[in-house]
Image (cartoon, rainbow, N blue to C red):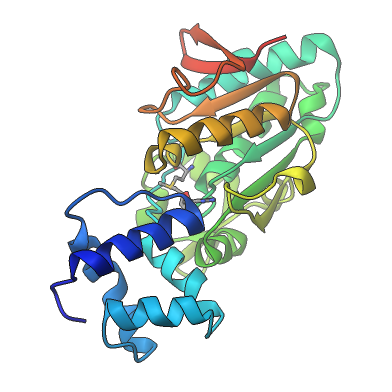
Length: 276
Ligand SMILES: C[S@@+](CC[C@H](N)C(=O)[O-])C[C@H]1O[C@@H](n2cnc3c(N)ncnc32)[C@H](O)[C@@H]1O
């Protein structure tokens, strides 16, 4: 692919990407298109961004749109990312939910990437149950969704190598919650069993997912415009049961985007609760 993309092609590509998945490319990010799409365009025998845009407009081959989105998304993640949300879960949110009623808890990991976030939530549940065996959290269900088909495949496979496990996972947790498999490590069945993966674009309707007690929407809103952030947060508020909780990434906030939540500051950091 040629290194220089015309301003017109860049504008058209930005519009395509924002309409398709919400990701806003700023000014001067042509290099991102080159670095992320060169391999795909070679595979698809497409010579330039101009030709890519024409092909995308035709809508054929049909897999092209999702392959482009897949290549343009940032899938950076790790185990127990930022640590505090998972401390807040086990030390504040789960005990609070248990006060009301011992019932099943539904959790949505809404941009789950390669699975570390939902599996970390499931590990946190197992750790909590060790001290609260009668908790309703025992029957929790974690819906893990992402727009990226390739990330979802990796997540479902639930096998990671040492270097990936080394990003946030202690040796104690590794030996307790993973089984060695060839050169890799497989997530233990009881951790995997709680998690169900499916494809979901955050721009599309959430109706099929049902209601949740807790939503994780971490490190994805940063890529979206203010209007999209507000729309997503308002629709997530509607997808929560009364008093439900929302966790955002460390550099994200609802301030200025949604009035539906109150901020909770605790020794384990900041999270949000749906207002009554
Ligand atoms: C940086 S990762 C964050 C992963 C995880 N939540 C964490 O905090 O470690 C962002 C994820 O958002 C996904 N994503 C981007 N746009 C999306 C959209 N419109 N709908 C659903 N997922 C999206 C990407 O595929 C990627 O896996």
